[in-house]
Length: 163
Image 1 (cartoon, rainbow, N blue to C red):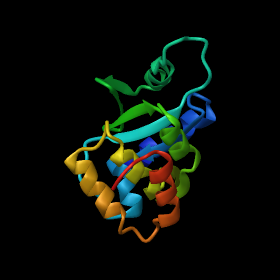
Image 2 (tube, rainbow, N blue to C red; image 1 turned 120 degrees about the horizontal axis):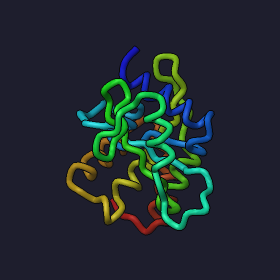
Image 3 (cartoon, one colour; image 1 turned 90 degrees about the horizontal axis):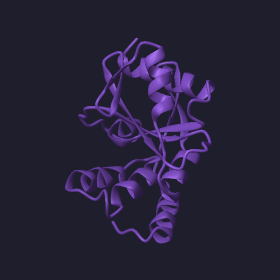
Image 4 (cartoon, rainbow, N blue to C red; image 1 turned 180 degrees about the horizontal axis):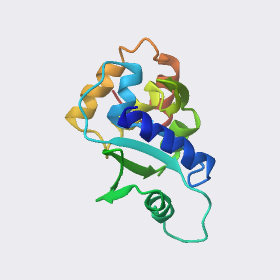
């Protein structure tokens, strides 16, 4: 089993255990499901956290759950079979939609929720995230045969984004 498969299994376990309400693979690893893969250091995962009475968002329950199962924290990552996994709480409506509309796909027998290409493009085009590397990734995703152009156009209009 690859480290990526192990990480996906752990994500599904976290959802079953209600450590996260839902998740979707985002970032460069998500690209591999829609276009040619690009080199990356880590696995970025958008998550919905369970409701909390705390006023601040805390990833503590994720780190505690992972630590109890022998996974190591390293900086902002949890190492799962050596693969750094970064958990990113969904932080606004675009990210929320990206998680809610994620596709459940199969990776070597392991189900995985993956952000759709239209949402990856929109997330890459946000002003706070718009780097040359992300613009290149957005351009590559525009060529994906899985791209729903009308959905992308709707996202660009609603969130006031430009290609």
